[in-house]
Length: 258
Length: 200
Ligand SMILES: [Zn+2]
Ligand SMILES: [Zn+2]
Image (cartoon, rainbow over all chains, first blue to last red):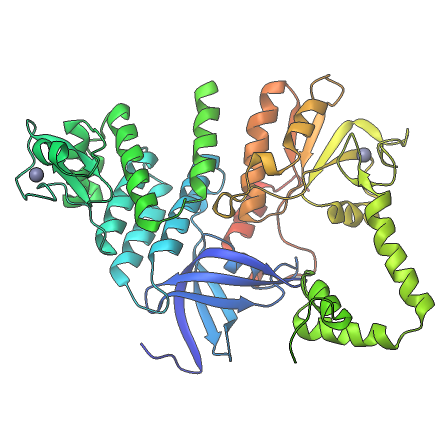
């Protein structure tokens, strides 16, 4: 969509960077223009009319004007501030992690309404579901599918043999999915071992809606294994460490101590 | 014109540009201003910069910037030692002291937790805070981190760490700013203002 000189859209603030004394550069994920940046003047002052409407992880309507470099935000109004996560350390941290993934995977200035719907839907669900870690896995798997990095779980990525309970030979991030046991033994790809139930869970996450999945949450050992595997795959795909992983690990240790 | 590292004008412009809020244009303007200024004035500025670095350290108790091992607030017998207000930056103390409304002590974290920027517990003065809370002298901790997503994350995290120590944890009220209009307030601020409403 070509932008007018002054244009309106909606977006979720996925990143903010301080600029000068009191300004910010914000990164929005929008349904109309994909990932865009906006300059927000004086939003770090307590009397700014815009600041709360432009805080990290808020979904707001936006009015921007085109600039020579970066566009300037001239108006904003909350649509959804995801109030049900605001007093929960864990859920805020999960939401920040999702924002970081969107920042890495979404394309600049290119509309991707399906990805926006996935992200917005997961942000809303995060404040409601009793299974936030399960929801994060659903988000990751569908984010990967949407952006063209869907891991192959149904057949061996080398020989195309169907992957079954008896022949599954592990998961190879660099090959892009499952290996059969034969190819694992006879190719240069390394297959990280995973249980058959984890393999099935990822297939289910690729196939079913969240409403269907939420009725049958997996047990925590399967969920942990899935998390480790996806973390490995995402890190390989991005070719960099996702910064939030360190914090999520830290929180997990804190919870285990209690 | 080739940029030589030894060129005094360009090297000053480069140093100034790295400061927060100063772009290359401002850096250039300041450099040429200093070039025209008399030497006494420039020497005073240079001395002030060096003194800032050489003569200040972090207070051993509260981590505020100080000229001595213990800052003037921590060593003041009139400040309530059982009450500690946690802030993100030394500048926050300046704003609060200006009101004269607070008589306890402080603790400066030097930042806030920001998982997506890679800022975690070890980048902040949290271990120093926990160490100072061990002896039971502090009865109440007031969390005064900013009402931003990072400030809230930090506040919730600190509450989790401090509550098990049996110390009362409170949070500075996050509501409607004075001089603003309700009509323009965002949802989070209004929601916080309701949660923090008081008998009147
Ligand atoms: Zn094979
Ligand atoms: Zn001190």
